Length: 254
Image (cartoon, rainbow, N blue to C red; front, side, top):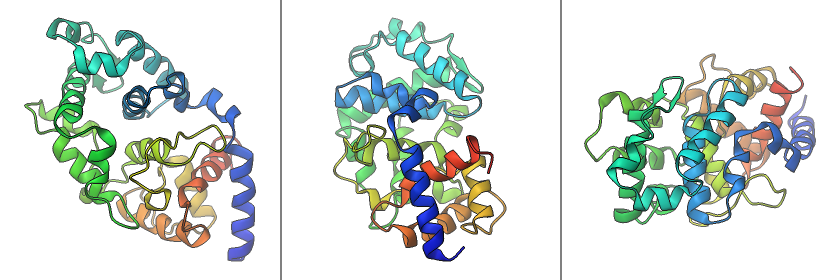
């Protein structure tokens, strides 16, 4: 395909998949249960954190997590007492367990009390075409409290070579507009043009078949390659193509 043909093909796939019925099988449905900005942010961040593995399992465990927080995630984060955290001890999703979850709640409390919330923290180190330095800075602040070393693996650092799929997905949720009723567009200090694609096995495989990535690993270098090529197709909203790549891979076995 020529570049124009590729753009037309992927633009059509974006229209096909970037629509409300996408929510029925995707973890983004969890933050869609809330209306308050901070509830959406926190539920979205925690849901994206456990978004690996079987999608039905992700959704079920994210639902359970919201129930454990009394379906009021921001209130729970800001007003919990130590005994409230103990009821989180039994939570587990793959290698993410109750100890990790308890630290995440403490850290989110610190971020809203001392760093003006998630949006401001991610916006601090952003530059015109990338949030990778922002994500690395976020990880530093996120773990500024005393923590178990095992918990740090649940937040990726792009500056150490990670594609940071789950955080990039969370940022897509928060930043891209709500015109189609899928993403939220509740953050205005970061622009869609700064976002990176949530690179996973599905989007990676499709991107390689379409010539958008040459690198074999789904790592930070592959993401930079994909970012550069998606920005040629749409510099203002490159990450809309996540819907096309993911949909082609998961639903069409492209």
